[in-house]
Amino acid sequence: MKKYSFKILFAGAFIFLFSLTSCIDDLDTVPKDNDITLAEDLFKDPSAYKQVLAKVYAGLAISGQQGPAGLPDISGIDEGFSQYLRQYWLAQEVTTDEAIIGWADGSLPDYHNHSWTDGNEFIRALYDRIIYQITSANAFLRQTTPDLLDARGVEGQLRAEVELYRDEARFLRALSYAHAMDLYGNVPFVTEEDEVGFIFPEQISRADLFTFIESELLAIENTLMDPGTNEYARVDKAGVWSLLAKIYLNAEVYTSQNKFTECITYANKVINAGYALEAEYEHLFLADNHMANGVIFPIAFDGLRTQSYGGTTFLIHAAVGGSMSPADFGINGGWGGNRTTSALVDLFEIDLGDLQAGLGPVSTWGLVGNATPNGWDGPDVTLHETGTANVFETFVTLTDGEWKIRENNDWTNNFGDTGADGTLEPGGDNMVVSAGAYKITVDFNANTYTIAPIGDGRALFHTDGQNKEIEDVSTFTDGYAITKFKNVDRNGVPGADSSGNFTDTDFPLFRLADIYLMYAEAVLRGGAGGSEGMAVTYFNDIRMRAGNPETVSSLDLDLILDERARELYWEGHRRTDLIRYGKFSGGDYVWPWKGGIAEGTATPGHLDLYPIPATDLNANPNLTQNAGY
Image (cartoon, rainbow, N blue to C red):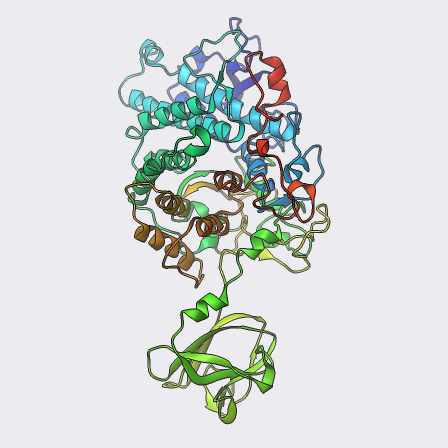
């Protein structure tokens, strides 16, 4: 029977606290190993409580006891693959239109093929990791009950700190149970109230697990520290509110009852807690992103202290290959695995027609040249009035070439830029431009012009040498590469690990832009307590921060889903989002290589839940498999 051992690296020794699993063995013998300490001895040191809690947090970031390999927390899979975030990311992203991985390790291709079974070792590794994390939190809670604290004489300030630690452990347990609920549905259920002994945990229904998670979070929301006042990467009230908003947004999937009003309530609490959007989108995903605004709860990584082959070490290394320079990403080499599909790329195309429709009346002025759609012979690309006399503008897609400005499709009155200094002269030199979409503004009051590229700053793609479409999944240069996560700070300085192996980049599990979009969706789905006007404002704030000129005056649900992809791609949300929209399985929405076919195909509805791994199903007679497996 599979066993999970929870150990804490403390004062150079492994301290064995407890061991829990689907089958929980009795711990009534005294260890003989000199490096193993019983709980009653461990907690004689007041500092131990915080160090043990640190291990519970660290379970989200590391994969074993010595890092990066050699003493894993769970067995049955390579330790590099077993890390929590790495497995969660694979399950949430590689199964969708946002990511594809070229490696054929074991059953890994089953993810983008939508062909997994209950024997898939990656699904099992994620399940085991979630159970391990829940086990760790339960163990901490079991060792810090009021009775035990009384017996140990824990009083005063230390007692208050330990009670706070307990609430943080309850959050971490709720977080992992929320992942289990989302991914697996009906799972084995154990809390600190269950006796340590030889038991087979009962299976809890998805709806009942939702109720438990909700009750835990509501119980601690007012006892945790205020937003922004806890130590970095430790949870506070805003983290609890964010998780509540997330489960409420998806409650209809989990319980068949919508809780969009509750989602709005808790999204508002986060929004009103003093957070702000980070001014530069890319700063959210760099080695110094602990300085970025808008991050509510991260998984913290440190290239020297949390070494593993998962987490952002995996996200950064595995996304680098082809003509990409590893040094630009603060690493010593790329692993050439992860890319995206054309479905995500296409979401970033700017609709110039919509932008043109919002311009003022047509003027007599226009753009001409071999860079324009109709060449030097015209007709010219029309400039529009702006409401300011002698100031005109347009949106246009240009090719590599030259262009000028003229009136009435005639050369009698034309302007160019002699000296390429942004100043217009009558009959001046042709202006040179590279291919792209632009907003061009002409001011004849000052005889100046601006030509500003149009795009979305979140479209962080490496295209040099990459094919947009994927013909061969195993070929890294098929599919655009993603440059979102980097192990350099905003000044370009690499992370602390001089070897370039391990990264300092934290992973933003909850951040403000996600909350904005949850609020907007819940409003459109009928939740009370919000307004569509504020939803539009939040939506446009996100777009304007990215430099996307396509602001909107109204919203619809598909627009929000697409914006979630543009804002949150590769952050572990996409599978859950597509399921909520009814677009993950089935044929209503297909993307390249969905179902293992280049053009994509419909897949069975039971895939909206992962299977309970066969290993646990066989070990625990109280478990029933999810339908369809």
